[in-house]
Image (tube, rainbow, N blue to C red; front, top):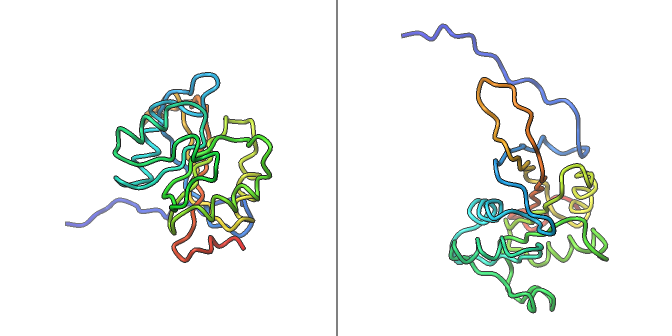
Length: 189
C-alpha cells in the first residue's frame, strides 16, 4: 500500500536567542500558578522532580515555599535541609538544583559557577522566573558564562492548549533548564 500524503519538511527555525546555540525546545506544562510569595505550585514541584530526577537522587531546593520539598519526599528523592543549603549545599553533588529568580544579593555568574560545581555530570539547574519579569536571555547568558548549557525552556500555563482550537495561554512561569554536560564542561567556557 502506498502513502499518498504530501510530506513537508519542518520549517527552518528563524531567530537566535543566544547566538550560536541550536534551537531549544519549548514545552508547555499545564500547572496552576504559584501562590503569592511562593516560587512554584505543588504541581510544578512534582513535574520538576519526576521529569528531571530518579529515586534516591539529590535535589537542592533553593525555592521559596514547601512545594518542592513535598514533591521530593513523595517521590523518594533526597534534599538538603534549609540549614545545610545555607551552609554550602552539602558535599555530595546533586542531580537537580531548583531556584527562583531574580537572586537576592547574588551575582548571577557566580551563582551559576556554584551550581556547576555542585552538580553531577548531566545534572540540571531549573530556574523559575515569573513570566515577563526577567528577560530569559540574561539568565541564559549568565549560566553559559559559568559553563552550563541551555537545555530546555518550559512555560507553565493555567490553561492547556487544545488541539484544533486557537487558545491564548495564560502563562505565569518560565522555567529555564540548564545542564552540566556529561563531559563536564557545559559548552559555555
